[in-house]
Each structure stands twice: as structure tokens, then as C-alpha cells.
Image 1: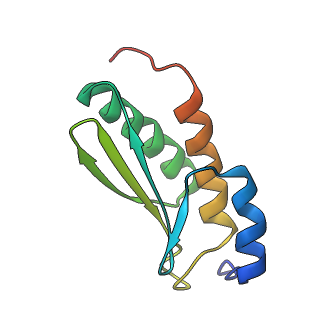
Image 2 (image 1 turned 180 degrees about the vertical axis):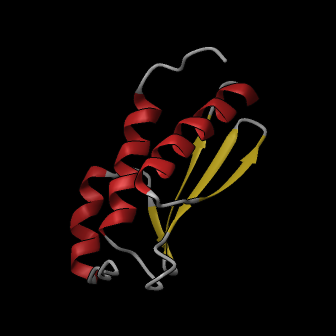
Amino acid sequence: MKPELLSDVAIQTKFTKLPGWQVEGCELVKEFRFGSYLAGVSFVQQIALFAEAMNHHPDMLVRWRKITVRLTTHSVGGLTALDFALAEKIECAQSAPATPP
């Protein structure tokens, strides 16, 4: 069963738990900044573990001390509850203390 696209109202309601995230087209996007390149890469690894467990994989751009995460549900061409669930997990990971690589 395919996930259902969220309405604009539902998307706006879900934003209350996601500071700094934006909708760009049909994607949920946020740029995260880190004190070092390795801290950013460690964060990407955390996201990858969540994504694999959910079978819902974001696009990520890794730059020096910056990670951009883009979420969308490709199978339906827009935002679904899966995107927001993964974004919430990412927010929790970002606010947790980083462990050294």
C-alpha cells in the first residue's frame, strides 16, 4: 500500500515539531551545521541507520561542516507521514550529543 500525500494543512500542522525545516517544491529540506567535517559525517551515518530501518531514504548533500537533508516520498511524488516521521528522528539525533567517530 502506497503512503498518502499530505494536504497543505496537514503539512503546516506537522511543522510545529520541526524547527528550521522548509518545504521546497515537493521536498522537506533542512541544512544542519557542525563544528567539524567528521561530526557532520557521523550525523549522516545516524540518519542512514534510521532511513534503512524505515526503508525511507533521504537525499543528503555532505559539505564541509554542513549537511543538507531532503525528504520526499518518491513513489507518490510528494510529502507523506513517512517524511515527517524521519524528519522527527533526524531532529532527535541532531540534538543528542555526538559520539566521537
